[in-house]
Length: 120
Image (cartoon, rainbow, N blue to C red; front, side, top):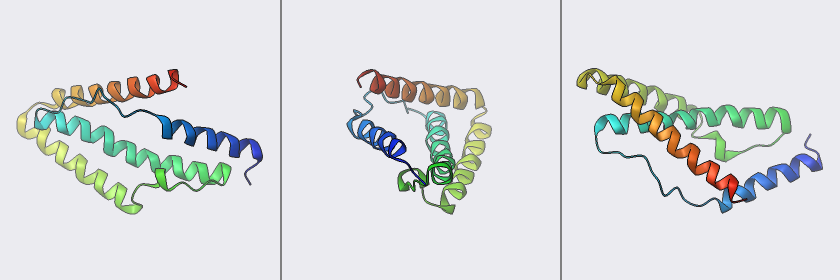
């Protein structure tokens, strides 16, 4: 069961999310390996969102479509993205570039969210 404090916390998170500015410093996607690294982060976040959704439901009784992704299709799509990344990294012999692009994407998103927290 969700108590009033939990509802307030959930509402505060929603209010913050709705006021968060669009990310203006997006990852550079100039090559297929850049796209592969970025896709890993974005699709992995969708898969991680499902874990967040289950935990919100289990611990707070909050059902969130935002984190739920596309149900079972989310993990299927993530597996397809991983297979495509393997093909890209192996075909171009540049797995380090895929990792660099993923790290760059994580960094850009981390900075974006940190700025959003600072502006609160």
